[in-house]
Length: 545
Image (tube, rainbow, N blue to C red; front, side, top):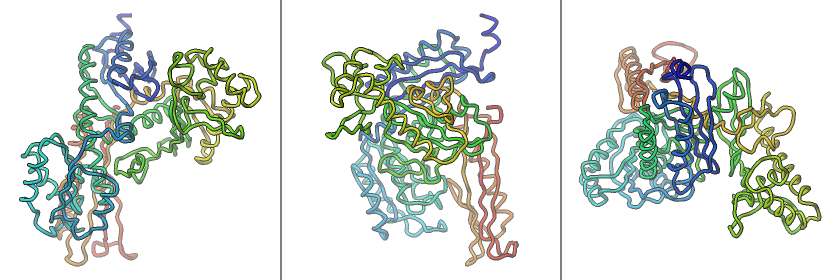
């Protein structure tokens, strides 16, 4: 045993996924790409740290703390906080929107700031200052709202973030709990409303996320772990706690992203197309794989009515899960969801509960979920309303869930493979073209354990035919000049530097930058005079991940 541990020293990761029903954990060998051990425990919604502590403690029974190179966490905390309205109050600063009331109104129809300041300033589409920033008004506002959370959005800040950066400096000097600037979330992309909403929501999640990070890091330290504690983003990549604390909104879809990655690994997806479905307690999340690569959302993550600029996998969710409420209409029609209830099989007498697909599986003996007796009694009661036996009613529910799952899978395209994961899914997936990997019940934890870095950014170089200049718009500044080769080389170097620095902040100190480009010309002639724009597409990679 000791020799085996010596051979695998410093190559193990722990992945923990905190789901709506269960918290799953795996101990994963990164070199051999195999699961060493796994755990599944009920999620404590009152304290996620308690669930993570329990999973971590059990997993470390089969490994020494010195063997672990990374503890990776995926969680629904951000999603739940937004949907349940549990985020912190945020003061909003709008710069340069006074002449664009329609944009300002749309922002304020989407978010409700605790306090609002709208001042002169901002830039135009070429990054030139429209009006000077009203620093006096900003200083007064910052002092009035000192100690709270802030979001700052300036007109065209992705083209020139100077006014946002100055405003942030003034606010920090007055004292604040946290602040997000729009250009930090946009990564050079334009869209005033989405950028502002994204910054606002990000600041609202800082407080609750900071508590989670502190709790997880305390758990890791108490078990003697000296490895980095990482968190899964919505694009299935990892970031360290420091980054997660700054940009907590980026974890909003970490659970579905983890399950997608885990399903591809467990299902052996290489270069083919596939549809992946992850069934949990509340919903089934469906993603698409093209040529062995998960499809990303071009529009950014959507959370309820919010549209954001957060990088995310393309995930479609339906209200169908193991704990979805099963109801009978007046005419005997059967519906499943969208509400979630506590199953009969998981409750004690006298507790509030409802019939669910989990009860159907328990009653049929298809899954060992809680009390089979309670589920059978409930199945008998519901079946009596339709004139059928308990077993027949449970089969009806199981059939309805299987039908809806199959429709959702086939409605996502004609991809050759359909892979289903999640704790209850093996009992509902049907049909010869649906596969359920052996470790499907812990796919999210596997995805968390096997994740690595993913960071990309595009720099646009635009040719102004009016003044002859080339303008390069970087994530934190601007380069311009009449000499294209100079602007191009400086922009490429700046993008590479930005990617490597950002990767280091995310917790990856050994990342390299890869850059490709796309050129657009006016007319058929390919010359410097007809060059309209150049897009430098950069990504940070870790080659040994």
